[in-house]
Amino acid sequence: MSTKTNSSGAVSTAVPRKKKPLLAQLWVWVIIGLLAGVVVGIAAPEFAIGLAPLGTAFVSVMKMIVAPVILCAVVGGIQAVDSIGSAGRLGAKALGYFITVTLFLMIVGLFAGHLFKPGEGMNIDPSTLATDSLPENVTQHADGWGFVLHVIPTTLFSAFTGDDILAILIVSLLIGFAIKAVGEPAAGIARGLENFSKIVFKIVHWVLWISPLGAFGAIAATVGKYGGESLANLGALVLWFTVTAIIVIVVLFGAITAFTGLNLFKLIRYLKDEVFIGLATVSGEAVLPSMMEKLEYLGVRRDVVRLVLPAGYSFNLDGTALYITMAILFMAQATNTDLSVGTQIGMILLLLLISKGSAGVPGGVLIVLASTMGGIVPIPLAALSLIVGVDRLMSESRTTITILGNAVAVLVIGKWEKAIDMDRARAILDKKPVPAL
Image (cartoon, rainbow, N blue to C red; front, side, top):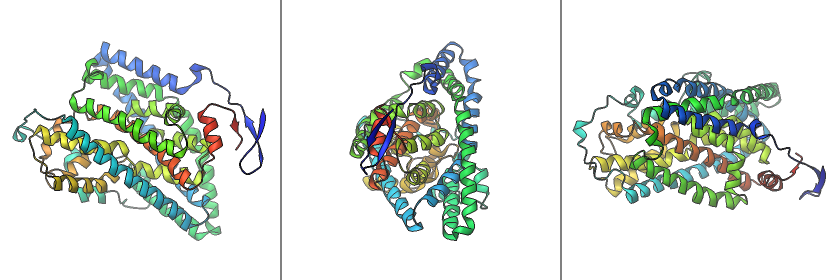
């Protein structure tokens, strides 16, 4: 054990990090689950398809925990700031960052669609397409404003019995600000939620260890359904979207992370458990609790993590932002539908609004796309049938981008607020002795 003097002049103890044996690390077992799923999916496709409930069950269990995690985190985050005004300032900075990044990614997706032209030459007659293959909730919500308004819960408590992240966030913010405004008479509730959060996070630690099984079932079912060839060649849209996603992660997220003074690839290594779990289960919500713990341990101030990260899962869906404009352009090219410059600008502005309610909603991305079609975007709703079959495959890239994008967002806001211990963050990412908290 060694000591060091931090920037404030105080002496802190540097604690060497003990390296766990390889087979005691979660990410290793997730990779084993992924590889086993690929093998089973190729060798026994019909059996593999029947394993889908394993992945679904894991995601369902994690989503069961998301509502109390967000409630405890948001309320705790608001109580940790000096005043309601400070919380509002923090939220305004986060929202400004979210809107800027998602708008930029929508434009990147549109540019990639024009550059790669994944749907060009398909020459599909829209009249030959049907909506029979679309999920029922997609056709029901093919209305932009209806999709936005559905996030308002029926009662104060009904938000916590559903799976809509935005509705949970809204109610949690109201409760958190109300407790802060009431002050001492409500302090007991805040302390109770803080203690309850310890129970919730203990459950999270237990549940995460079944994630390799969930990864095995989810990837086996995907490979079994689409075939082993799907891993290498899933069609032009999947291929070029994946290429674009990699470029965005390396170039955009790399530059933003470098701005904070940290290294993206070291951050990815630090969050490898969450990246692999998200990649396999295509659920960013499944790793929200562990992301919060890791970012706090990294040295980001608690209120920043607990306010920014949950909000990011509704307002900073970077993977969705990149995908939706590229998907719309693909359908337009495939059906030979002309989209004027004005139409594309209006489409982006509408998507910027309605995409914020898609988190946690089954088929959320398809609903967002449906909400723009037939109205401002003159593409028939039936054209969605062209992408519904491979949407699950592209969800993997979308989820990975969103997980990393929200981690980067927390670092940016932490840097902006001077609320991150850079010495600690660098030490952890460099795998060096960690300054004591």
